[in-house]
Image (cartoon, rainbow, N blue to C red; front, side):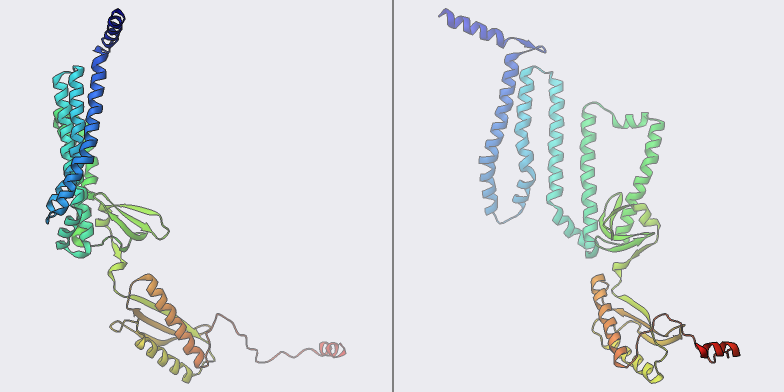
Length: 375
């Protein structure tokens, strides 16, 4: 019996050993309770949540599915909060500190639920944004979603700081010159925000458009709260502040539904008048009957100039598409047909050249002519 008593006394001695003012048995007990909360959370996820998921899938409405998706993960975090609460309580942490920690965690959970609600409701937000125009619904929806996320995170952060006794407004007001500098720095942010709103309201562009602003040109990848991102044709990413978009000339190539073909071709000077008339007529007919040349746009084919080394023909028309790859295919087909017309009419394309015409060779002196004859 005495060995058992001695063993229990030794164990009791070690359990009452003080670390940082807390008996070791309390530390062990708090760790055990926290691990128990993790185990219960796992049981809740595997058993209860799965049963609830099966039940809501059988219902005819989608509201319960959406609500479950929004609260499921934050709900499981409540087990962690409970474990932290009881662990701190056993450790003897002051009740005021425990209360503040719990409030912080609950604010975090509430913000998490709102954040999830925004993410899961993205499709509904985009559908609502279509009321402002289908062509810019994606941009307006994305803009609104980002704004909501920033608002939720900012509100949660301010609430946590206020709960811990930090007067945010007083801190900003006490900054003095620092607050003035902050306000001046925020001026550009506000200008960029309103610049982005102006772009969306005016429907200047949308994601996927090919635009040019200044010497920057590319495809719009994202319209954000502060900046717009453009992917250049060299595949580099260009970031432009939104206020620049609102204050500079912006050329949107995707807004056009046609694209111009403009060229000058030259035929050689040995082309006859009859050949030229025939070539012009056939090129005009080919373009008028081409299925990919816009019939409602200006079309011109004229013999315009006597060039230095060619007779110049001016060709001006529009394709019925603005898609670059399709435009190139149409232009290639037009060029091949023009080559066929030129060849069929016995003419040929001119190239830069110089011809020298000598009317009469000068007569040689007598002695030079004798030397040439003897040679």
